[in-house]
Each structure stands twice: as C-alpha cells, then as structure tokens.
Image 1: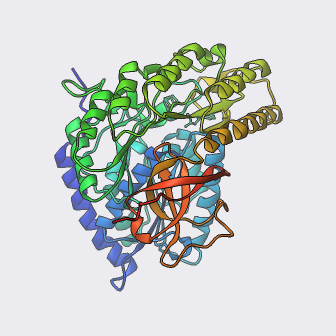
Image 2: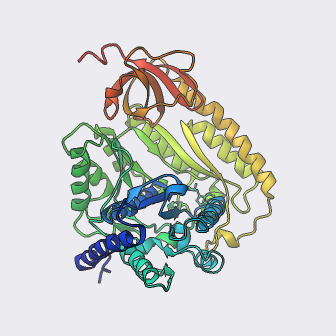
Image 3: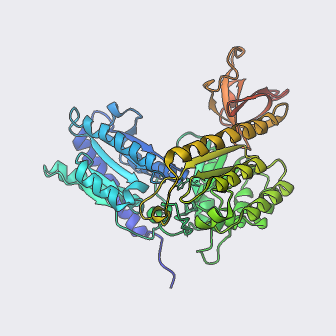
Length: 495
Ligand code: 5AD
Ligand code: SF4
C-alpha cells in the first residue's frame, strides 16, 4: 500500500487553532501596544527560502510584524542549511549573538529550524551548549510550528520555562494550505516536491529532508494561478530533483507535463525550475522547454565534476559523455539556451588529473556562471567515510584555478550579449553595485533599475520606477563583473 504523506486536514485545522492561541500568548508576553516583531533568516537553497516564507506566513497569522534587525526583534528564527560545514559554523556564530541579546531583552524568543536541526549531533549541541535557544524545529515539523511555539509560550507564561525539540526522523510529509508570506512581489518560489532519493555520496540532503514526495499537480496549478493573479511575473518550480516530479504519484503529471500545464495558464510571466539532475534530464524535457514559450531558456544542470571515476564515486549515475550529450541536444533544440552548474572540487580521492577533467569540461560547456564548492565532509554520508588524502590547502589551489578558468569563460559569455536587445524582468531599483553605470546619471524622472534576463543574468539600466514589476526591452551596452548594463530599447517607453 502507498504510504500516506499528506498531513490530514484536521491536523492543519488544529495548527490553525494554535495560531490563534499563539496570538493571545504573544500579546500577553509583549503587550498590546504594538505587534511583536519577528526576524526570520533563511540560509542555503531556495527550498529553505521557501520554508522561511511559510514560517513568516504562520507568524503573520499570529499577529507578528517583521524586522531584519536583531536589536528590534522579539522572536528570532534561524532557518539553517546543512549542506556544507561553513554554513553550520556561521549559524552557531549568530545564534551565540542572539542568545547574548537575552541579557538585555529577557523575553526574547529564539528558535532554530531547517536542515541543520535535523542532524542528531546538532540538536544535541544546541540542547547542551546553547541554553538560550527556546525551540528547535526540524524540517519535518514545519507545519507544527504553531503548536511547538504555543507550548514554549504557555510554559514560560506559567513561570516554568520549557524548551522544545521537534526533530524526529521521518520520511517526510506534505502540508497543503499553510499560509505563505513571500519576499517581494515580482518573483515567486513554488515548491513542487520535497526531499530527495538520489543519495549522492557527499550530500546530506536526503538525510535531513526525507524521501522524494510530489505535490499534486492540482495544488501546484492552483497556487500558480494565485501567484499570477497577485501580479508575480516569474514562478520558479522548486525541488531537489524536479525531473523526478510525479514518479511517486498515481494518475498525475510528469515534470514535462507539469511544465506544459503551467505554461498554458493565461498571463504574461516566466517559468523557471530548479534543480534538474542530469541523470533524468530527458530529451522529452528539453523538447518541452523548447516549445513552452514562458519557460526560460536557462538550464541549471549541476555536473559536480568532469571525471567518470569521480562521478561514479559520487553516485551520480551519468558519465561525462552523457552529460555533454544532453548539453549538445539542448543547444540544438532550445534557441539561445544557456547553462549554469554546481561543481565540487576535492571530492575524497580525487586526483589533480581528475580535477583537470572538470576544468576541461567547464571550458568545453561554457557556462554563463558556476557555483563552485570545496568538498565538505558531512556526518552520516558515505563520502565522509572515504579516504581523503589531499590537504585542504591543495584543494583550495585547485579551486582558485577553476575560478580563474570560469572567470574568462563566463565573461566571454556575458560579452556575447553586448549589442543584443533582451527582454528583462525589472525587479527593483539597482544599487550600482556593479559599478558599470557609475559616472553617468539617470535623466529626470528616471533611476537605476535592476532586472534579470531569461538567461538569469543581472542587468542595470536607467528608466522610470513605473517599470518595476514588469518586463522591459533593454539593449545591452556593456558587460562587467558578472552583470550587464544597458539602455531601454528604442520605443520601450512608447506607450
Ligand atoms: N561539499 C561541498 N559541496 C556540496 N554540495 C552538496 N553537498 C556538498 C558537500 N558535502 C554542493 C553541490 C550541490 C550544491 C547545492 O551544493 O554542488 O549541487
Ligand atoms: Fe544532494 Fe544529489 Fe539530492 Fe542534489 S540530487 S540534493 S546533490 S543528493
């Protein structure tokens, strides 16, 4: 029999009741004069950002406002990432800072959630060494946040402070209908599935996010329609491995079919998706991207490394030649396609010669940009038990070598955009952080705007604020520092 993964409606109703109770408890704790302020900070991938948006949604229902300043916050929630060690260390640093705030603000509430908390050694460390943390919410307990918070509030209201640790292991569930409070009003994340079944040997994700489970397409399409009605102009379909969407559902859509269905919704918007595993990136999917006009022609296709031996040791289930075949087929099929990728340098046992195969693959593909990481051993993964003789300093030298290669290769790609007129989704005011436009001044009534092309490249240009939240045609004039600069195309402001 198929396992039940949907959180029952009655359970979600119960959590809603807890939200009302939390509202009362929060008023008792922080007074009626103003709304309590919550600081929610998400680390790591878009999936985590999306979870953070649900936590914010629940906090808003409890009557909270939001702040980015620790000094102003009444509730602090750190939504953590476990994918690499440095992310973990950073979190412990800021949790330490937050707990110190309790010396001056006794009723401050501190919670930890996200992937890190799902690891037994982390939960143990928080329990022992961070007594200031009031509650820990594992990834599988996200929908129970109101109940957990209520328990903490109630016990301290009764003068017997009780900390909560909701970090049970689980294959994972799907909770539909939680309130969501998204950042910004232009681009939206839309999770289509949760968890991962791939067990890449270096990766902690399957250990902390459970097995692959897909949302029903009807729920996804309903949410997509709502986003379009709210004026969002870009929807990113999210999952650890979107290509296996629907494999766990009966009588529902596959990922290419889902893309078609979202593409068929009326409205002027873009569709993106991440992340796509090369192992199941089929020709059918590429054909679908090619003929769906709203799907951006950018594919993030993490290769991780260029050596077949290392790919096998990573349990990636494709070879370098198969990966290059997909790239080749996509180039022939999708007009103006561009690629980005993730790469790990220094996997256990990787030799310099094997690393050079990654370098040559990067040169061959010509990615517009790369996310590069030095291998970081993660407790509980298979790779963490492998021999790892190459010292970190050596790996760092390889890493710098790869960055240099990509700097040249990526800039070559950016330069090919100069002179072209590209459709750009205008996200907000630019901050001239790339410095390309500095030295010139916007005309009266105009400001520096920042947008993104379908290739996911940042573009700065001058234009009226009224363009924010919509599409504009921009002629690219310059490329530098991982960004483009341009001017509104002739006639772009005609009406
Ligand atoms: N060490 C370094 N990088 C890692 N990634 C995942 N696990 C590790 C690890 N243990 C990288 C992969 C993945 C990206 C999200 O993070 O490149 O695609
Ligand atoms: Fe990790 Fe592989 Fe899953 Fe990506 S697909 S999260 S790399 S196990």
